[in-house]
Image (cartoon, rainbow, N blue to C red):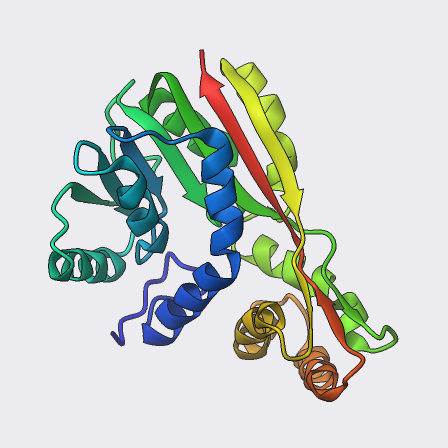
Length: 271
């Protein structure tokens, strides 16, 4: 899987797929608890919007059972093909795929019982339109759920190095691709405006020491992507080098603690 996909700020390739797999292993319990609170019964028709390789879609398929279904929507044929191959190996057939963007594929109106979107809407240039398209595709009484960053909270202890400003660079990276690292703060207002009752709004922060999975998850993002952030103007190359050096020093420091940026669960029921 060597192809690149220009619609993705982070790229589409085997390295990124494996990073996404590890990311799901780190945050999967948070997502699973979110689904538990929503209560996803067997038989529901689900849409995973911005599904990537479909790690969440496999979890949803287990919940909805053979009487339900999951549709994966993504702009990358590479990721959708990978999922289809994996699903076939597992004997799973109650899924479908749609290649394209939420705003342009023409989703069926009032169709899905549950729509989920994880780590996508912060990257979208017109997130309210993105949100309203999903609301239109949701059946009355159905649930729309987002899980994404409200990009505060990111921190490395001990303080005093270049990484004290790491969150600023990450937010600038989102902006460089047309996104907004604070989009999740707008979701409750958009739900209210477009006839969706907010039923869950919960922030989460994971933390761990220098050997934890959560800091390894962040490592796999920041170390490869900081040079790209510099190329996109989120920081200078000298600043990126200083951030990487400070990060690597923290990975060797037994006193280090890492705190993730806030990830917010937001769910609403269509009236």
